[in-house]
Length: 394
Image 1 (cartoon, rainbow, N blue to C red):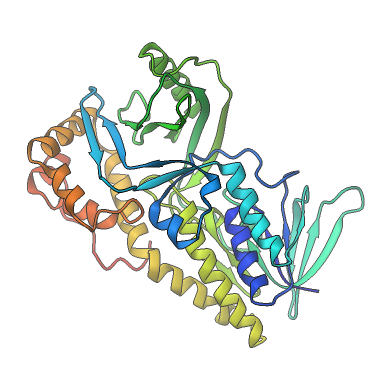
Image 2: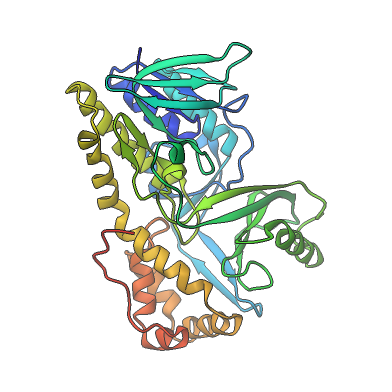
């Protein structure tokens, strides 16, 4: 019997497995794809804080970023720049493989091409039924971690509910004409209620994508055509990939002998859709909670509830304010967004925020509250009152 079976071999699942194996536990990772590091619809942009906190190897970083160009619906430019590195763009395939290699170095077993059919929680163990080759595979473990990413039906089957809100991301790899800064595009003709992006990964390549609640592929084709007409990309005839992104976490991310982590739990920034850093932070909490529970031989729901209390204590405020801002932004017209760009530039708000140490690539709540705390901005948007700063639940 395994101490823990982790379902999902992405970076979050691999990190949980790595931490648990390093603490002396017997761990297996089940990955439904044929290989670790398969195709994912992810821009791969993480903050410098994430790089430092989780010792991300330089070999998987394609480039470092300290600036970005933001374009309003009418084409007005707002450039954000800091002298020091703010973010890094990952080679997602290499990153996933590196995280899996770390786990395997601690003795974690990986079984690939093994989608999980069913999980049955019993009084003293968890049974995991796996589709593997022709005969299938039946495993037993003291506990299970679900780190499947968005879209798995396992959490629903286990009575943990569905996501309250989500969006679809679409992205393509393109050849570029020497674009050297991240560009972000706003406007209802580009990505209604959300945004599009062009993220250079090398001097000649980039990732172009957007978020949308409907027809993301159609909007992305139109964005690609626009970038081609501007001479920013070489061709719009590229393959698109799509994936769902949760905007709110599950109502419950634990039960007896079970923990859910990462995108599968909805631990994602509602503002940008980024989930790598928050997922890794919660993976750390999950591993620590399970380690203590295994040591005390107490994997009850009451024991594992500590995991949810801790991750919500760490991220709850960010997710609440971020989601509130997300819903507010979706209501804005192109005219209002253009007006906000004008206000920010005219009043030097961009420079003030950039000088503030509280402005962070990974922690958005303080910047959101400071921006909306400006009377001229809140009047333009029509904000009646700002959300509670305490924000425990989402």
